[in-house]
Length: 217
Image (cartoon, rainbow, N blue to C red; front, side, top):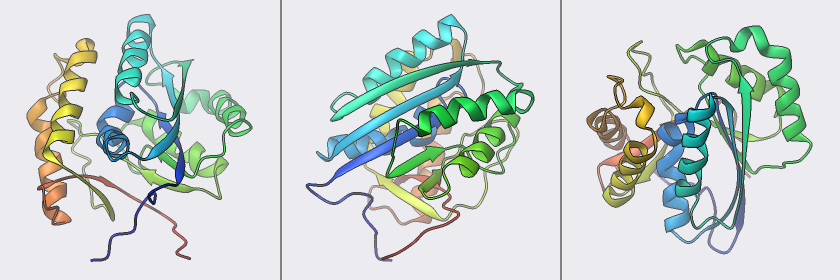
């Protein structure tokens, strides 16, 4: 299979990351971000987390700082929407994201998946797809007890060092989540191993995404 590079050497890549909750971006696309930086690519990242109380906001800021260490530039924005009630706040969330759209022109967007079992995740995906109609959107996955892991069509291979760094940073910065049964190093490692097998990653590990629409030129 011929790999299509997300960014070529010497080019600059503008990335918009959207997460409904603190830790979503890190779980779904954190390894990809770390890998791009480690490879020496110049990336400009706009990192947006839409909900979280004061404690979770602090976790978000510290984690984003760690994951984006080495990026060419970074901007972190935190929303204050009510966790678990995103569909009821759809208009306000759309206005918030439309404001971001006026200030950011990304080459690629990382956001939630269309068929995610969490209602907040689905709503972010729906609004992202509605607002950013001319952009490359990669939908990431979040393991959870709902059992909604599904077929993917896009993979970004991760070496072992990057994967272990991702897991270490998750455990370091999200103390509020450590008691959750799905927030587990072996879950994160196991999912990456499964996706690595599917794309025949030389390192055995990968993050997986869904792209709904892609133009090859």
